[in-house]
Amino acid sequence: MGIYRRSSFLRGKTFLSLDNPYQLKNKDKRIAILVGKGTLSAAESIAIAFKGLPNTLFFGKDTPGLTTGNSNFRLRDGSIILLTTSRVADRNKREYGKPLSASVYDDKPIDAALRWLNGK
Image (tube, rainbow, N blue to C red; front, side, top):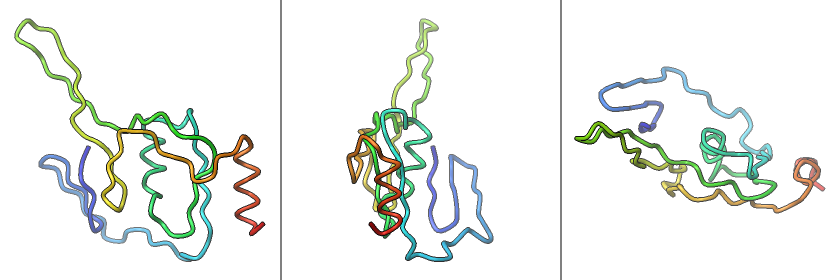
């Protein structure tokens, strides 16, 4: 895990800066994100990247909440323990490590998202 801020990414001692980060061309467009129990790990992290954007809704069911970073630690006896050492946060600094909630709960999230995208 690392830190992304103002077009720069820092992980440990590695630093990466983007010269020309992508900017949304039309911030007024609606964005529908489909989530559910199959949205886990990296997919949850990607969905969380959209949290806090205007005109963005999450359709479906809550995600499993597997948005943590884990590290291996070797013990004296040679065994290894895996511990959670970081959590994902959204653009408003809200930390996860728990399920991402859908904005609109629906058994047919694609249909609900399409209705909303089309202004219905």
